[in-house]
Amino acid sequence: MVDKAALEAQLVDRARDLGPVLVERARQAELDRRVSKETDRDFREAGFYRALQPARYGGMELDYGAQTAFARELGRSCASSAWVGGILACHGWVAGMFPDQAQGEIWGDDADVAVATSFLPVGVSAERNGDDLHISGRWRFSSGVDHCGWAVLMVPVPAEGGNGPPDPVFAMVDLAHCKVEDAWNSAGLTASGSNDIVVESAVIPPYRMMRVRDLRGEATPGSDTHGSYLYRLPLFAVFPFNIIGPALGAARGALDAVIADLTSRQSVTGADLSRVATVHQRIGKATALLDAADAVMAQLRGEIVSKGQAGEAFEMVERGRYRLNLGHVAQNCCDAVDELLPLTGGRGLETSHPMQRAWRDVHAVSQHIGLVWDLQTGLYGNILLGHGSPDPKL
Image 1 (tube, rainbow, N blue to C red):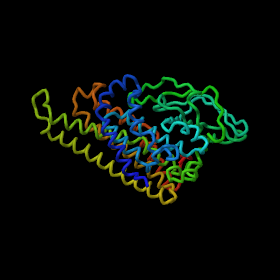
Image 2 (image 1 turned 180 degrees about the vertical axis):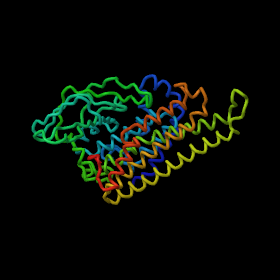
Image 3 (image 1 turned 90 degrees about the vertical axis):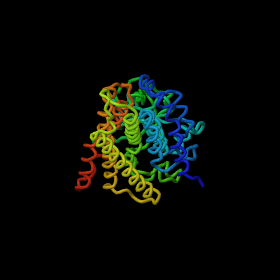
Image 4 (image 1 turned 90 degrees about the horizontal axis):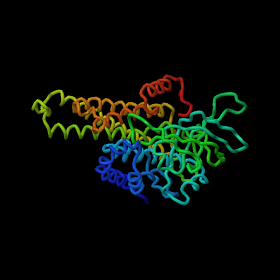
């Protein structure tokens, strides 16, 4: 029997071992606006992308949250690299929900093929032709796409007869038949290579499609094939686990770096900053914020895995609470780096400074729609007070 906890611990150890080389590559990765081929190779050799991939197709099929654990460790050194490692692992989970025929096309000949996604269509055309779907247009913010062979695109399909809102569908496309456009220019997560996917004309057969509203905790083609709870989890309720790890790691890495810096230097006036009371306050507050965030993450993960393994239903209020608390974890990370940035002085304003990079990256992570605090509080408030979820995908 596979020891999933031991395999997860190995991934975390490998992430820790890669720390020094990721630190060395971080500045160049920002200049290139993507992680290097060498980093992609290291991640494949470590097995990061296969963490949640079905075992039937060479994956590890670990418990949900394994991707968060190793991304957190990677994030201590480079949040952009952690984002790519964690998010491509997550995409193996999403692809694992598709029908077996689609999974066979992706991984049948090569278990190391990575999958991209884009949930942001722009100027997209989608038409039904019998059972097939014809699509064209542009999809934005596809992180790590330069290192992927396939992509899952969210497609708004017009309602039957043109009445009612579009029905969102996940469509699997072969990137060999698409164009990846270099369009990523961002102040944070600069090296994540979140470029655009352009589709001129693609025909999507039924086995490469899934209705997004069928991914709310019900059985999926993938869960029927593999039998794992992973592939029947409510996708959008737990999705923020895939993106919060880099923020947790970057904030913790910033805290460690600031402490090391303060204990090894003096200010330009000759003062020992490690003895200043306000410095103690900032270090203490940042530590408490991040310790609280880690505790919440552990509690939520344990609940999700336990309920998933037991085959229990996820009530709507629970789904909203996951999103609420993960949004709050992101806020804790932002508050922590906000406390720490002033301790770096003028050096911390240089874009090449590790603290500046961590500050930008943590705030960038918090801007993801799955973590934006105002949205999560509104979502939970609506549900808790009896008005239902304003997000039909939840």
